[in-house]
Length: 170
Image (tube, rainbow, N blue to C red; front, side, top):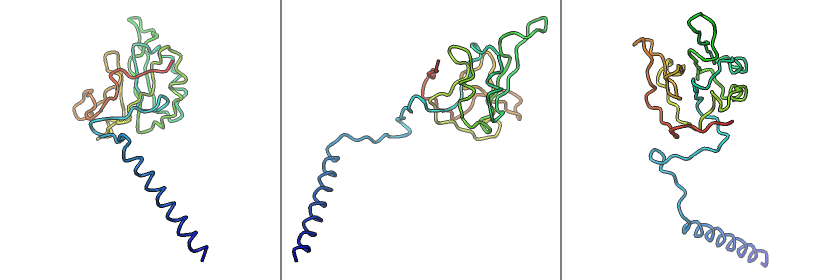
């Protein structure tokens, strides 16, 4: 009989404690993020979309050699005499092959890094062509893709950038 009442008391105590926790959260401010209108900022070490800055790249090919997926390609720029210059003519990353390991960023010797992972997590691809991003000297950080049907470079549609200028790691 004593065991029966002690069990009822324990269960009632647990029920009151549970309701107390619920009431405590009832009066705290909401932490809900209204997703399409508000976006959370990922932590600093987040590996989002790869971005590239052609102006700081010295075309050393270390990122190409460090990539285990073989998804990075680049071509050195040449001067009028046909000699290679320490600038990049074009650079491309195939996001279909990239495993976001960050080895390309770690291998980059430039300060600030010419290739880096941004904090952008909304990368949209509607066609296979859009997965291969290309960069030249005048292209934006997010890059452009080559549309084979149109035969021209196009800006990716639906790409939502969290930052205007993405933070780089030194």
